[in-house]
Image (cartoon, rainbow, N blue to C red):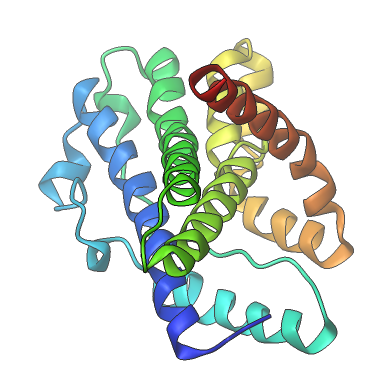
Length: 220
């Protein structure tokens, strides 16, 4: 793994975009459905400083990156400051929760598709900055698909957990929502035991198949 300053700087662009747009999407969709909490707190913005968590966005991914280099592989993940959403302000809280939660992973999928389009354009062109753009595009696809897959796991407070709570009937939804205070520790346990990647794999494979189909439809 090349950890040169140039590579780190190039990778920072798609990583920051992935985190920023993911969080801003939650706040924007919450506003559309009646909750302006995130907007009033300045979180419906593309300013990454509003979304970066010093521990989850910088410290933990950095340490995991160094560890993965030392052992020759591994899984790197992190998190941003959650966008505050007052679900009671939504017009139909249980139903609208689904769309607010799904906005983040959907934005990551859209960004992955955009980075794939850039990679295709670079391959077909002859730009002097092609190597740098190709590297950024690869990182952009990878980070967005990983963030999407991680957040789609049905573990509150991840987006997939909130989507599941929205879709499940009342009693089952309530039971799942009570897992939320322990969700972070569940994720850490899955990471430590190696099961996190296993659970994410179906989402990653499905998204790659869908992206290949979309790209094939436009380039074939």
